[in-house]
Image (cartoon, rainbow, N blue to C red; front, side):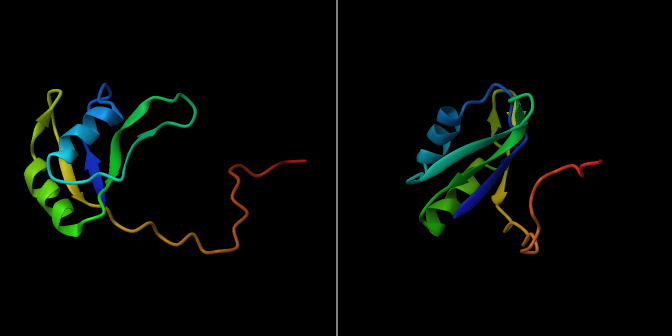
Amino acid sequence: MNIYVGNLSYEVTEEELQQEFTAFGEVTSVSIITDKYTGRPKGFGFVEMPSVSEGQAAITGLDGKTLRDRTLKVSAARPRPDSGGDRSGGGRQRRY
């Protein structure tokens, strides 16, 4: 189960986040999203738990909890939208 965690303090580490979720079961991965240019955290992340029941328990137990003076927003992550398939990826258009 993929879980969204929002309103994170910029000082929270992936290890701290994993520790919070491990109280509810096995954690497969933790990822705090960072700005690709500055490397600074964006204030949200994702936690992967293999068990749906443990994931639901973590959502119930951690949504609204305070961590480093911030109230966590915890919910099931929405699936990523399909990118459409044939896009080449890359950012800005080049001008010649």
